[in-house]
Image (cartoon, rainbow, N blue to C red; front, side, top):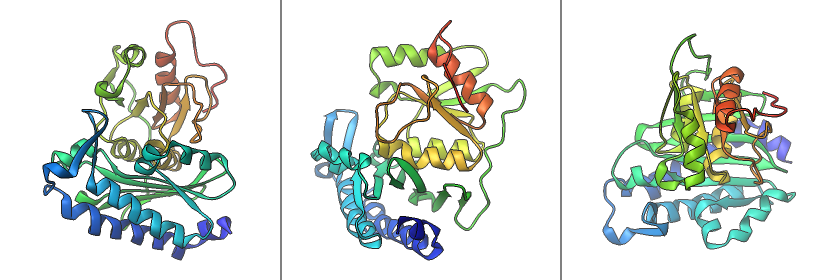
Length: 286
């Protein structure tokens, strides 16, 4: 059943429609219109959640699971309330992995660079993904083995950095990193690499897939932040991996940090820097 769903252009179009509808009904009416009582903190002053995040996730859960009977949803907000939901990523049911508003701080500030992220996974493998920037009316879709494209636009090809080009790398924002993670990411502070903080993971993955930046390097593994983007980069011709030289697993248990880059050589270079002097990246298969 899952194979038939993924192979059906009509089914995938209905997912796109559900995503656009959630944005139109729950997210965009609140963009630059949020009241103070519609914004709260989760795990600290930088970890915000809004009414738009919560209602959009409920909207998507209702509609996406109806499109694929027997599927379940693992989303950022539902999992915050019930961490046990993550167990579904190791189960047999198809799983919708959802970040209803990726880049909530940007959304709260009224900046357009936030995303809505949806990925469909089965038994740990991401099969299709949608990256939607509603404030920019931009939607990117990737299907495993089927490439990546902008809806109504071009096929996505990450390409390779120009020789001698300073690598532009988006990294975990310092507000969300531990001291140990900061030390690991600081290894990218070398000639030939220009690292800057990530605002929205989904937005930066899309930038890698479009060849606008060269790589991302992240120190956390929450699946809703990465599932859609990793498939998008892969299907645009890019490469990814962890400092253990392994593919990133959406079900967790990854060696961190990890990277996704425009090409395999760039990914190897970033991983070697992140691993530290003399450590290398064992068994990297990119």
